[in-house]
Amino acid sequence: MTCLCPLRARSFVVSTTNAIKANATKANATKANVTKEEPMKFLMLICVDESKHPTPEEARDHRAATDVWVHEMDGRGVRLHGNALQPVRAGKTVRARHGEVLIADGPFAETKEQIAGFDILECVDLDEAVEVASRHPMAGFGAIEVRAFYQP
Image 1: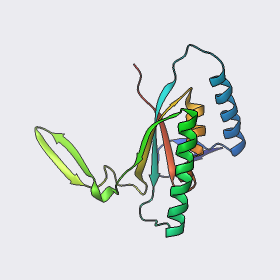
Image 2: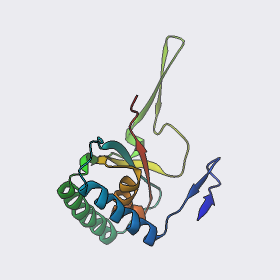
Image 3: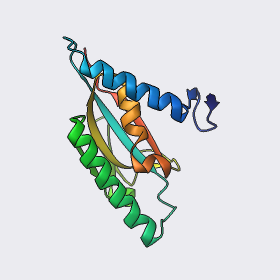
C-alpha cells in the first residue's frame, strides 16, 4: 500500500505483515548462502512523540520488550550498537554561518516525532534492515526510519 504523509512531500510504502515475513525469509535465505557481497550498514532511528507519555506499566513493558529485541538481534549478529537518547530538551542544535556559531536549545527541526534512540545494523540488504526494524517494539508506538550508510 502506498501512502502520502501530510508531513512529507513524497509518498512511502507500507508493508503488510506477510510482506515483512516474506522479506525476513528471503533475508535469512540470502544470509545462509555463501556470497562474496559485503553486508551493508544501516542507521535505524527510533522516533517517538515526546508529548505522549506511556503509563509506568507501558514504559516497563516497552523496556522489557526492547531488551528481548536487543538480545535477539545481537544473537543474529545484525545489531552492532545502539542506545536511547536523552529528551530533546536536553539537546542543542549547532550551526556555523559566516564565521559565527549559532546554538539553539532542543531539536534540529519542528516536528511532532523526535529521535529517541538509534541502532546501527549490519544486514545483507535493505529488506533485512526493514524486517529487523519492524520487529523493534517501538515500531508499534512511534516510527522507525532505516537508512543505509553512504558507501562511495
